[in-house]
Every structure is written in structure tokens, then in C-alpha cells.
Image 1 (cartoon, rainbow, N blue to C red):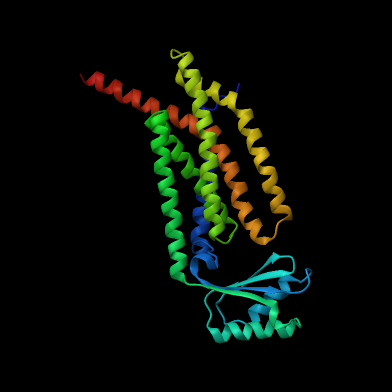
Image 2 (cartoon, helix red, strand yellow):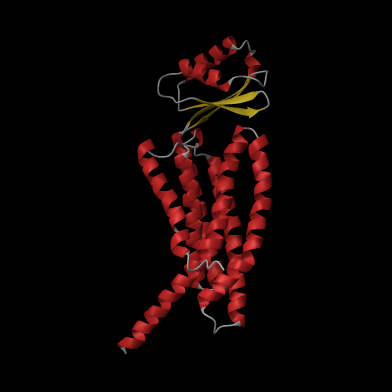
Length: 298
């Protein structure tokens, strides 16, 4: 029968490999591909009056009619609407782009639905608030899990959450997905989902350990993980199904939100089943070894 605790060195290699690949890609690409939400810039919403507009052709047209280095991107927003995003441009360049689009595609002035400008300062504040929210959530969860279980379980759970966030960031780096406010929402969602999965596993471990404290702790953890495995997989599948449907049938902005959700759900399940329990065992063993050393020293 598969012993998850004993295979910990193998299961931990998978996320380490993904994170290392992402670290290399990070330096290759020169950092994250950040959306207007974070680096600042302009977002223009245009009603193209038809839903079969070739986005590649539109992107090329916009690139030709914007200053060099503004890195324009075009996304389908909703129905016949598209969202055009660029790094900060001046009013003259923005007005020229609007005029060019209206003339090229024979659109009325009302087709320019909305133009939003986000400063780099606002983007920096969003990132700082996201980090602050994640840190506060992690601290509160550590306190709660420590009270309900013990400090070691809290540390194991937080390590698993860090794993989930790093895997999500790794996917963003490797596939150059724009980092925006959708990512913040996805991170906070996955933190809640993953910690719930982990607590279910820890609860089963505690129940089985209370029934037979003489059994080796690693054996109890293995048994508990096998007992909760089906539940964890079924929960993840049922949660993934609507997210996948949103990815298939949703507009671009919705897809950008579902990608980190899908990755986070899989990473959260992986860490809850294959990492959380073994980490608890490892910490418990380390504490036992320290106690033995202290006794031997006396």
C-alpha cells in the first residue's frame, strides 16, 4: 500500500522542480508580466459592433498607432466589446488612437465606451494591500490552527500555503500570464480553500492518533491520508468543474481569473494530501530527536 510519508522526498521534488524552472524564467523574462492594474497605464473599452473581430489584426493595428514601447494588448471583454490596454500614454496619443480606431472600423464616437487611467502609485498600493491581506490571513490561520491542534501543525499548514502561492506564481511566470487584480482574488480564494482541505486532513490524523497513541505517528498519518484521499479528490473535481466551464465559455477577463484558480486548486490538493501530513511527521520527529539529545546530555 502506498506510503505517503515515506515518499515525501519524491513528492516534494515536483513543486521544487516547478519553482526552479519558474526562477530561471523569471530572470529570462526580466520579472513578472504585470498588467495595467499593477504597473499603471490606460484601459480603453470599445464596442466593435460585431463579435467576429480578428483580435490579432486589431492588435497589430493598435501597435502601429501607438508610441513605441507602450506594449498594447487587446482582449475580448464582453460580447462585441474589446479592452485595449497600454502602459501610460499622453492625452494626445490616446486621442489619436481613438480617432484611428473609429475611422478604421467605421464606428461612431459612442463606440468608445470607457477609458480608464491607472497610475503606477495605485498599482503599487494594490500590490502592497494584497501582500498585507495574505500575511494577515496567514498569521490568523497560524493562531487558529495552533489553538485547535499544535504549533507544528500550524507551521506545516503555512508552509503548504506558501507552496500553493509559489506554484501559482510559477505558472504566471512560465506562461507569461498578466499579473493583475484577478490574481489577488484568486490567491485569497485558494488560501481559504487549501487551508480547509489541510484542516480536514489534520483533523482525521488527530482522531486516529487519539484512538491509538502507541502506533507510530507516521503510520497513523499514512492511514489518515488514505482515508481522506477520496474525499479530497472528489472535492477538488467538483470544484474544478464549474471553474473549467468558466474557462471554456467565459470572456478573456474571466479566463484570466480561472487560470490561477485551477492551478491553485490542484496545488492546494497536492499540498494538503502529499505535503501537509509528512511535514507534521518531520517536525514531530525533529522535536523527538532534540528531546533525546537533551536527555543524553544530562
